[in-house]
Structure formats: C-alpha cells, structure tokens
Length: 249
Length: 320
Image (cartoon, each protein chain N blue to C red):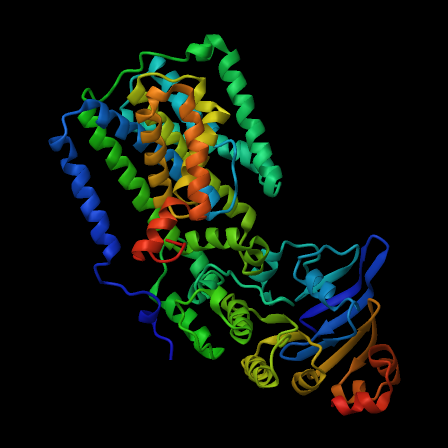
C-alpha cells in the first residue's frame, strides 16, 4: 500500500490540459523518478500534490487521508516537503535562518529559539554538506549551495516525503554527483522521494522506479531498466531513436 | 564542521550597543543642557511620530504589506482616549493599552477581508477603509465632535520634561520589543513572508494567519501611539485618521530607510524637525520634503539609515 495515492488527477489552464487523468502511487521508502519532455506536466503534478495548485478533478490521498486542495502549509505539516525548479530561498536571510524557519519544533516555541533548534538546523546544514558559513546571506550562495540549502530547508520540517523539482538543474556534472549523493543518503534515512529531473543518467541511477509523462498523461511506469527499453518512451520522450536513448543509461 | 557560534557572535559588546548607550546618555542629559521647552516639545512630537512610523515599518518593512491606511489605527487609539475620558477615569497607561487594543481589533476587522488581496490591491483597500473612518469622524459630530474633534483631554503629566522622558521610555520599550520579536522564530517567519510568501508556505508557515498577527501587532503600536498622542496634545481630531498622516509616516520611513527600525526613528526625527524649524517658510516647506526625500533616495535607496550604515558599517545587514 502506497503512502501517497493519486487518482484521476486533472488540471487545465484555459484550453491547455497540463495533467490529464493521472494515477500514481508512491511507496514508502522509495525514490520515484518523474520524467518527461518539457511541458509534459511534471511540475504541475508537484504543484498539485503540494497544494500550490488546485486540481480540476481527481483525488490526492496521503496515508488514506484526502489532502486534495489543502493549503501548502498544511500539507507540509502533514509531512510532505518540496523544492522548486528554480532554486528558491529567502535571499536576504542567512543560510541558518533559511533552515530555522522551516523547523517544525521552532514554530511551536515562537518567541525564543532554543539551543536544540539551533543545533538541529546546524546538523541539517552539515548533513547536506553545506560548505558556506551559516551566517552568510542566502543571496550570496553559488548555485550548487543554493540547491543544498533548498534540500536543507525541506528537511527542516521533518518530512516523510520530499518532492525535488530538477534538483541538479544548472549544475556541473561534479556538482550534480554531489547532490545525487545527498539524495541517496536522504533516502537511506527512510525519507521517500519524488524526483523530477532532465539529467537522465542521474535519474536512472538514483530512482527505484520511474514514471514517464507526456502531454499530461502517464505513458510508462516501471523500473529504470524497463523504462530504458520501452518503445513508447523512446518515441514520446526522445524522438531520436533508441540508440541515442540507450546511451543515456 | 559548522558550529553554533559561527551563526552569531554573542556575549560581546558590539559597536552598535555603544552607539545606543551613548544616544541614551545624550537623551538623558539633554533637558539639563537645554532649558528650551519648544525643543523638548518638538522631540516629544518626533517620538510620537517615531512610534507610529515604527508600527508602519514593522508591517511594511518586515512583513512586506504596504498599508496606506495605517492612520486609521493611530486614529482609533486616539479617539478611544477621547471617548473614554468623557465617561470614565482610568489610569492613562490602561487607556493607552486600551487604545492599542482598539486598533488591534480594528486591524482584525479590516485585515481579514483585505489580507486576501495582494500588492497594490491590499494597499488601496486599506486606504479605502481609512477614508471611511475619516469620513465618519467628520460626519458623526455628536459623537466625535466633527472637525473640532474632542478637546480637554486631561494631561496625566503636567510638565513637558516629564512627557519628554516618558515618550522616550515608550519609544525605547517599543524598539526593544520589536528587536526581540524580529529576532525570534516568529519574527523570522514574518520576514520570510516578505521575502517570498509562497516559499514560506512551502516551509510550513500559515502565511494568512501570520499576516493577521503581524498587522495586529503593528496596529496595536499605532493605536498605542495614537492614544498617547491624545493625552499629550489634550485633544483628538479627524487629522489623526487622515490619508495625509499616513503619507507623512510613509515619507518618514522611506526617508529614514524601510525595514530597518532605526530608519523609522531617523525619518520621524528628520521630518518633524524639518516641519517645525522650516515653519517660517509656510507652504513652501511642503516643497522641501519631496525634494529631500528624492535626494536621499537618489544617493541612498535605503534611506538615511542606509547611508549611515554604509559609512559606519556597524549595524549589519537588513534584518535585525
């Protein structure tokens, strides 16, 4: 039984159907890769799950509780966190404060920051291998550190599921490898992940299961090995022939 | 390895503290150095404006909500005292707290519909509410005294020097409270809403509720300042609810530097002194304000305080 179940999810923007009748299930502890060409509806799915968009129809169930159309903050409080396609941080706040504000426990003690909250924030920053001093303003961070800070901020709310929207977008191969290691380690701690990514090599490596979308619909689902050789995926996603696609693996 | 002490250097006397202590010392001895009651009067007026400016800066500069109706909260506190002293005799400090609470209540009534709006729509909606109250204050003559307002509010401190110290005490308490609040997790969450409210939601913050809390705190301080203003001036009139007063306080904060707290203080003092000491220029002084604001913003987009901060470099970056 999956922890997150989506049934018949549909979302349109005027005449454009971004997601159409999508059904998917996320199992506890897995890394689910969500792939598809640009405009296939991947980010819309993340926005729908996390409450940033309301679906036209369909059902989103989290541990059997219907969370469809809930406000984003309530969904975070339920244990689902996310990052964004364009790295999004609080630019005029320090790295430390970026993490502190997401700490679930710190929210409850709203007037004073306890020592264990500070410690927790620093532990998270160490855990994602943040190299920059915590007092540095987030706006001064390079792209790879911004991506780590986003993951750290998502971890602050102690989520059970994290949705990562193109976590290595705009990074060098070395930096991407470093983020991939963080994602794998995160999963090893028991956190379930949904990852959207264009870097196929990375997605194939870290995912236990893949879902391929095209024109708002699911066109394929399976292990990386199964998806790699699926002719529908090759045609829909790459359109350049199997040979080139297989080379990505 | 990241360490807790790399986040903040605690336990050291910062240059900022030295400046503040020196300033407090100067304030303490000023009435001994100058016997000029007019100067003390101007400083009290500046302190009241500074309290009001701090309330606007808290909401606009730290929460990111540009409220063009902040005078309605100042006026609510001011009129509360006017109505109260007609019927009851209560200790002034409770009157001022009551004025703050009245403004807070008003902020909930106004805020719940207005906070559904974003950006300029929010600003215009608050402006409209403020204008409604201004019109009511003018029109309900039996209750509010109309254009004349309510007069003969008893002064609870007889001498100007007493008000001088009392107003500084209130100002000091408000600044320290704001500093404390903005450094707390609650304050950081408010600031995060200014930075990116969608991202704040993604961090698990109920931004709607926090905006209501934040504007209520700002309204309480504005109402408190309005109530004190009524006691000090021994009267209240519809000017305390006017758009003109809101824009005056906005000008003070912009002149001093938005989102810094100290900027609100500096701006309030600068505009009050310009207003009082350029009085001989009559209406022409109204040309001086925009010119001064334009010049400051041209050379320092972060206001006068931004200019000081760049020179002195002791007040750190934007957030308190």
